[in-house]
Amino acid sequence: MKTVVCFGDSNTWGADPVSKGRHAHDMRWTGVLANELGAEYRIIEEGLNGRTTTVDDPIYPYKNGRDYIMPCLESHMPIDLVIIMLGTNDLKARLNRSASDIAESAGRLAEMARNSSFGPDEGRPRVLLMAPAPVTKLTELDEMFAGAQEKSKKFGELYKVFAGWSGADFFDAGTVITNSDLDGIHFEAGEHEKLGKAVAPVVRSLIG
Image 1 (spheres, rainbow, N blue to C red):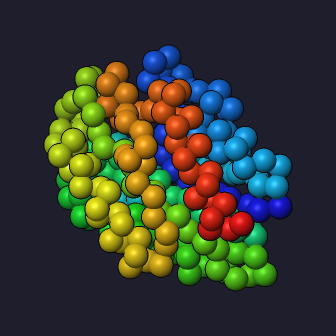
Image 2: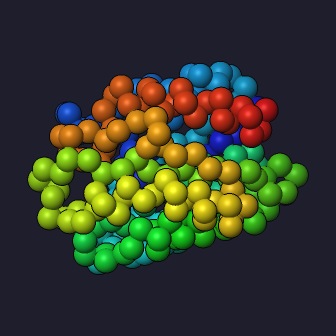
């Protein structure tokens, strides 16, 4: 059985912009991915609301992805593939980060995972770095994410660069899905389905 760890934020956790709750497990992109891949794959959903790449949030503690990625991966080893989709929360105005800094930070996480010994036979796991979909129409989150729309439009090209530098493979979620106009940052159910189905053949191509 192949093991895939999906390391992300609220969009991997399954935050629902419609109900303000959580999508059912089989409706989340990770659940759709598991269904598409079948019983020969074990999909581990490691989503945390508010998780950043490598920066501490002054309002919400324990959200720094850099602090948790290594113990997370070690706890699930051996891992064939790590999928990392983070960066949206780094766009919060209070963190004052450029698109390039965010993409480089995501690439750093990919490098950490890629250079670990948490793969099969204590080797290196494959890593798929996913650029988050661009921020769309912001409503009640407008002030919190001021400037996020323009920055997030650069994610696809920048994440591709830093994926290459880190030795990771790359996928741009924004080529497949769009965030909900209800809040600008989360996926509605239909977009989760699209993403899970789009990622499945990529996973197969990377780890068989």
